[in-house]
Amino acid sequence: MPFILRDVTVNSVEMPREKREKAWVRLARDLDFAKLDVMTSHARLDDVPRLATEIVGGRVRGRVVVDL
Image (cartoon, rainbow, N blue to C red):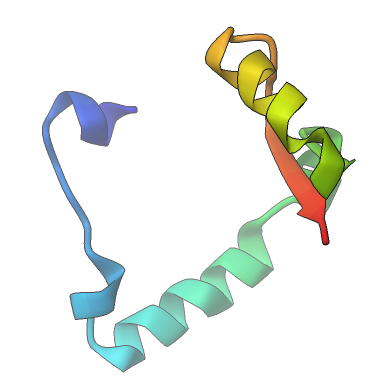
């Protein structure tokens, strides 16, 4: 959120490959996967219309992985 408030944009596509690889290595090392699991839920493709309404209504927290 601090980046949004300061109008900072980062376009990873324009970053050199070496910097992107370093970022992925650090993310893999530093990310607490247990915390990621807690804030992630799964849904079926058929659930997407209902989920869209819930997301817009502010009733969904975290991330939803849609299983195709």
